[in-house]
Image 1 (cartoon, rainbow, N blue to C red):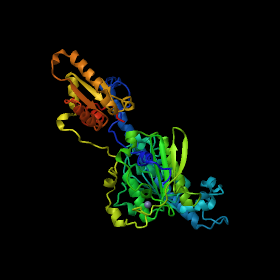
Image 2: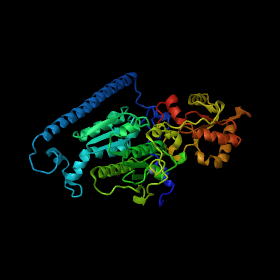
Image 3: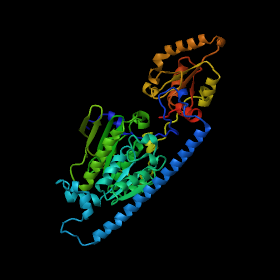
Image 4: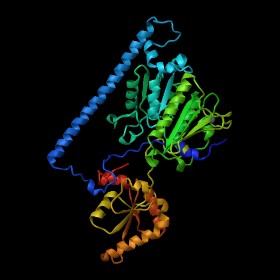
Length: 499
Ligand SMILES: [Zn+2]
C-alpha cells in the first residue's frame, strides 16, 4: 500500500466519544475555596432561585415537547399534502417527478448542470443511515436532511450532554439529558418536513446491525471507536452497502468511502486493529468542535454524491485534513485485498459469524464510551476522595502530586497540589524528595514519622501507574486517590469543575 502510515490509526479510530461528568460547575480555573459563591445571600434568596429554576426547567420541558410534536405533525401534514400533489395531474409537462414545492425547495441544486433534476430525483429516492449523532453525525444529518435524501435513518443510544454542544451542533441546550436521536430527528424534521426521518434509539450491535443496515442504500459511519468501525464495515460488506467513513480527533480528520464498486473495505486497509494506545477519544484527547464539523460535512457530501450518482466518490483514496496547517491531502490507499477476511477472494465471513464475532475482544477496546477503570494497586495503597478530604481537615502533613498533563492542570486543580505529569515523574523524583524534606522540617512534631505522599489524576488510572513507579523508587507509602478528581467532584465538592 502506498502512502498510508501507521499514524493514520491515531486519529482514524476515534474521536468524538462522550464522557459524562455528573455535574458541571460554571466557575473554572479559580481557587476552589473562592468558588463558594457570594450568591449565597440568604435562605430566602436560595429558595426563590430554586423555585424559579424549577419553573424554568418545567417550561423548557414543555416547550421542547411541543416543538417535537409540532415537527412531527408538520412532517405528517407535509407528507399528506405532497401525496395529494403527486396524485394530481402535473401542471407542467416537465419530464420528472418533482412536485412544484420540491422544485422550489431544491432549486439551487437543480440549477447545477452536473446535479440537476436527475441528481435530485435520485436523492429523493435514496435512503441513508447515519450511525452516530455526535460531532460527525450532527452536520452530516443536517445537510442530508436539508438536501432531500428520501429516507434518513439515525442510530445512537446516547443522551445529549452539556459538553457535547461545542461540536454536536444538531443538539440544543433544551435537549440536555434527552436522547440524541430524538433531538437530531426533531432538528432534521424542522429543516425538511418532506423527508422520512427514522429513529433508531439503540446502540449498533452485531445482534441488530444486519436488520437496521439492510433497510438503507448507503451507510455513514460517524462513530468514535475501533470496534464500531470494524462492525459497521463488515456489516456493509455482508449486505453490499457503500460506507462513508469519517474520523476526527484533536485538530485532524480523515475521510474515505469503502466497499464501493469493488473498492476496498475497512478491513482491507486495516486487517489488524490498531494498538489500544493509538485509540484515543475526544473525552481524553480533546477535539476542536469545527474539525468533526468539517469532516461530517464532507461525509454528507460523499453520501450525496453516491445517492445522486453524481461525481467521483472518494473510494480507493483517503482525505487527510490538518486544521492547524490548513492542509487537505488526498492519498491513494490500497485496493481490495484478496486476503481480506471480510471481502477477500476466500472470504469466510457469514451472517452467523458476524453475529457471533466479538468486536470488543478483537480490538481490545469497548464499544461504549465508558472510561477505562484500571485496578493496579492493592486497597492499602489507595484512599478515597472523602478520606483525603478528612486528611486535609485534620491538617495531616502530606504532599499531593497531580500527575495530569500541565494543560489539564491549568483547567482546574486541587489547592496546594504539585503538578508533575506522569511522563516526567521519574526524572523529577529528586524534586519530590526535597519537597518531602521541607514538609518534614516544617512539621517538628513529626519526628521521624512519614509525611504522606498522595497522587491524584483525572479519573484514577494514571495515579495508580504513578504510585507503582513511586513504590519502585522507594516512596513505599505513596497512595493514590481512587477515581481521581472526578470522584472529588462527585463525592466531596460538587462545585469542583469536571471536564
Ligand atoms: Zn476487505
